[in-house]
Length: 333
Image (cartoon, rainbow, N blue to C red; front, side, top):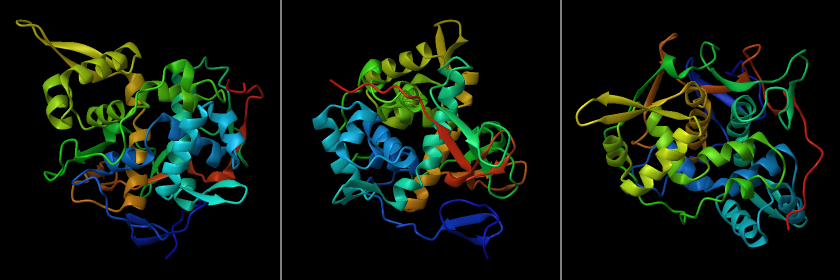
């Protein structure tokens, strides 16, 4: 039976609440008992890899020079990311450069929900560097995730997450942990809300901290325990998220004074990105016994996110989106 949801990839319905991607590789994870967000983060890598995928999926980059101009990455960095993404199955090497595989094309959801969040929170409302329009509709495309069962926009407050007791804190990563690029460096290619958003979440630890926030973790000791992260690194990342307006420190004890970290409105609005990353990881990296169970409380069904437009609450694929891009892109030095 075919799903009623359109898109660029072929799905089939197993039951009324479960969609599975036919082209999924269903590969086992090499990251131990890690949940889908960790495994996806491990495969995608860092902010530079996100920008490579942005260029390939959204803007049709194929040649090394196109990636170099679009991302603004140093040559050696770009070469290593292209090699890693090819080895991971997201790109394929061709005579004229690199082409995205279906695995990479399916990363569209992650890219577009991140762009929408960046457009809203990191740029003046009237001047985002790109404009997405919903083809066939008289409005902009505000990319978000809809419930695959009832079609309602997914909200963090409407989703109950039950974590697996088999999840391992900070299992061994298959990627080398690299230094986070400075904000001006990561944005020196194509002007884009995705690049600006990556200055907030684009390193491995920050992405995993954000995952914890949406699982309800609030206290420093709990973040440290759940992630197996060194306290100095955790303190640094939490301070960055507070400074960015993503988290706020709230005192919960007077003596001695103790604080916990809560998502701000800006932070809660980011929910669709880790949810999209989780769904992508499950489709392409296989399910794990460490995966959380998500339930959409308004319809009572398991969460199966589908890319859609938050303006009209209709599902949409790449063919239903038109991207008007900024003209000025500086050549990297």
